[in-house]
Image 1 (cartoon, rainbow, N blue to C red):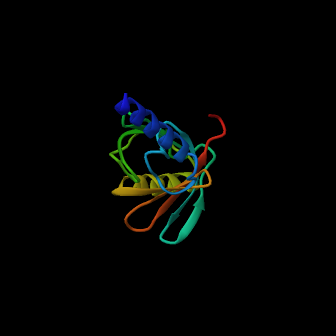
Image 2 (spheres, rainbow, N blue to C red; image 1 turned 30 degrees about the vertical axis):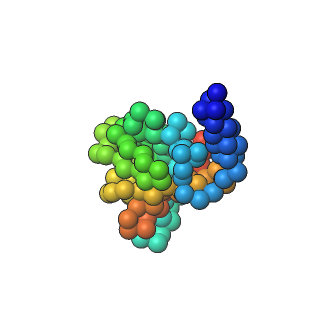
Image 3 (spheres, rainbow, N blue to C red; image 1 turned 90 degrees about the horizontal axis):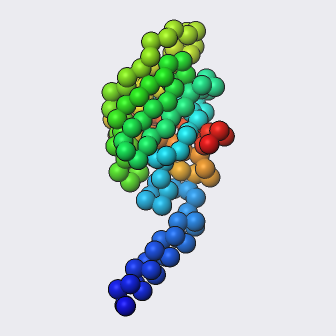
Length: 144
């Protein structure tokens, strides 16, 4: 009976503890997977760019990443380990859009795929930072 009671208490502690944190590094209790994220902006080389309305990202628990870079849709494999995310080579559609959207798309694709990203949640916003300090700023998509 004691092991069962200990397991129940552990589950209750984890369930209650998960509601206390809403900022900081992503943890098991704060998953980025299974959420439709809207890309708000990127910061590359210290310069910020607002995202086109279509820019989205979703990473599923099975390691599938998909979304829209601002013009073209994409899919890729993703690995999530704690607050570290690695997104593999992108497979994209090949539509052409205006120059500003295509420039944004190239910068976003490069930031997402140049190495391991560090994820940080703060008040429902997600920031992904690459090894060079470039950042992708996201918020929960209102269409969830």
